[in-house]
Image 1 (cartoon, rainbow, N blue to C red):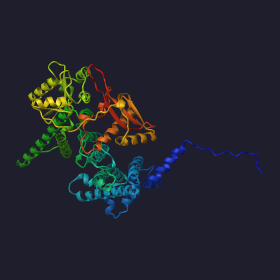
Image 2 (image 1 turned 180 degrees about the horizontal axis):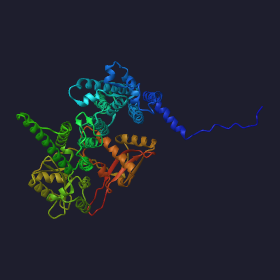
Image 3 (image 1 turned 30 degrees about the horizontal axis):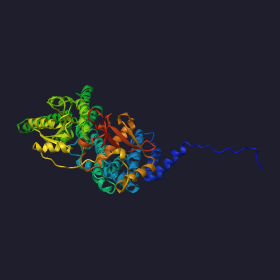
Image 4 (image 1 turned 90 degrees about the horizontal axis):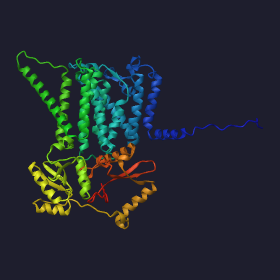
Length: 584
């Protein structure tokens, strides 16, 4: 029998089904992270720490770890403390950072290794920090005495340790960027804030950065020689660390490890000037500007000499009977001088990374013109397959006396390295003028990637020549991928077709920012994975590919993801006719 009613099907939410599936996959791939986050949430509700500050509860000393807990025999606190937060707002940061950092580590390293790094990093960070405080307290160091009386909770040291270990699996330059960001955070907070948690973070991250490459030896990407970009990042890191110290000292003054960090005489104007100066230097150093390098070297030398002068005053005062010298914030002063010393060493050792001259400097040198003149001469008289590289902005340009020919060159180690054949109606005469002008300026003239005709003329003039490579010229209209030599190319084309990857020939400057960012990331990954430094002089980079005169080939899949990039430089014949391109 029936009651005459029709059963209604259960309502479904199809839009949530993919999200639920992704969540299940995430939990299945990261069981350790998911379990710990769940325990944190349960502990927060069970203790009421989600809505009341934990450090104000009677049970807090029995849960939190610290020197007092160890001295009282509450050894279990190093196991119970990681699952709570001091105050309710910290719960979001603690659970979120743990889920992000340890979850990523578990995804890349596997559950066992991720759990080991997180737990070991947490325990080593806590125990080493507490052991350090036990050793140094009671010796007249106010910060150590005060910090040794504090209690702490949270799993942040383990999360940061897992992130530091996993950084070894990244390809350059992202590996260095992540490690510098971690180092910036732990150093600035430990030096200028100096809480017990900051000390734990510093210890855990330093240990993880040292042992991380050994733990993930099978997955670690080998590091090549430092590139120009890495030298620039290191210098920028030191400058930003100093600026961060000034900001933290002004906004959050306290008694840190180096003494009081607040300066009552400083003002917002002083802070703004410091931030603006550092920002200008950071931007210039990041771009490899020579003028920024000179200013940074000058400031570094000034601060290092100031530190030496102050040290000399203290030494003299110590030897004068009854003499004494005092200095406000001596710890901060010494730390700043050390940072400036490190920056000076980086700038001098890696000075080749900052070779981009300013326009004014280029025009101030006799016989040097701007890029527009070089482009006009190339279009008027034509050139070879590498001639368009002569128009790249990092070059300088020697122009002959009649203004009809030019040689693009760069200065390296006392050598004027010309790129390709001279551009103009009489390239051999231009070569002679270039040689004379270079020798007059105390430079050794040299040509790279010259044609056979120019090489013969140079040898007749007493130059030496050597073949280091040979260009491959391909007639594109008649190109057919036949024969055994093209087997790999055919296989790649077939694979691309099956994966839905298509080729687009575009102006990169006209593409969306998302596409340009993908191209830049591919370029950085390719450069970072090489054992040799980047060859910007002959291969160029994304900035050169953004030239509207350059065509860029993109291998793009159906989702818009860029898998490969080639750039095609124009080759001009006499009279401005643009012929076949050169791929870089």
